[in-house]
Length: 215
Image (cartoon, rainbow, N blue to C red):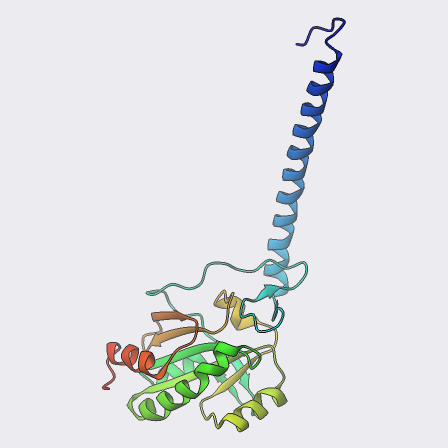
């Protein structure tokens, strides 16, 4: 307790200021915690979603009012199944691809993402070379239209399957927070390798060799 005596009013004022500051900090922390809890529940109920960010940034930012997932599936974990429609209107799933292939590359991308654009020709070249050995690619496009994806594939000459993740359902399953993000899934459905950032043909071939395909 501060004893109030003449000449001690300045100390009392400082005490009151400190007490008010502490109270405001505690109140702010409580409000932020409540907002985090609300944001998390919205992410689960709404299925999440992302905006592409500004310019050439590859980091994905959650839409207003949504909280991004931050922990991606790990190596050794069962890969979440993906069931989407291709840009040509055909239904396709990761489970179906695993029935006839030894390795499936699940690659999250967007046409506005520079590293994605840089790696696409190398992915196509590797796909063409190894497809007869049991390798395929599922290119999961982030929230672009069928016409955009089809035109991009036509211009680039890309033949591997391109799936439309219009509502970011698959991206949420894989907790994607940046593009490109790639997951190498074995025939047993287990994630064998994970790669964030652009792949090259050399790095792709090395990874496939490690997974049992001949170089």
